[in-house]
Figure 1 (cartoon, rainbow, N blue to C red):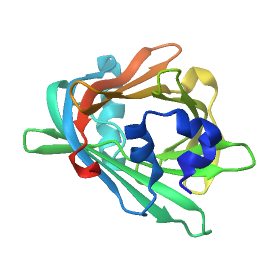
Figure 2: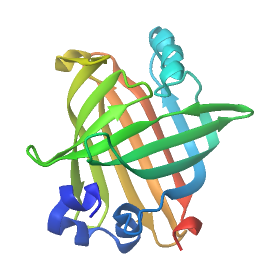
Figure 3: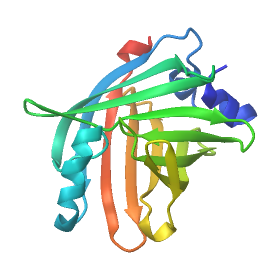
Length: 204
């Protein structure tokens, strides 16, 4: 059973069937898709050094724009302690330049949430909550976050957090999954955001 079935329980069956297929990982094979980001935004220029540093750990990047091609690959893995993991690789193509927004997720059964280590190597950890809407869409919200310094993890006060809201929904008319990601800080406001869609050819 995938970590997403575990976190959602009976709610998993309320997802749109295409989203169920996307998150089931029933045969253990990676999910691979490609699409276009209609818009990629970043926060104020004062954050530019952080975005540039983020390229070193495949987390953030300074580029932004419209109609950016991208690919997404979700790969099931087994971690060192035997827990099921899902590796997320999101690659954005700015001309010949590739940028990444990667993560490694696993299921915390004691706290009933998804653990999300962002970047490679990961400088940031976030608890994730998964919610299914009445229309079968999937909403993901980040909760408590920690700064990761090697084996040491330091809880971050909310004032220093970048809280993310992710929505995925299936569009019948276009036969695509539409995705939006919005990351904000209580003081600065927008840090990073994108919205786009990817086709389902590799799911059939």
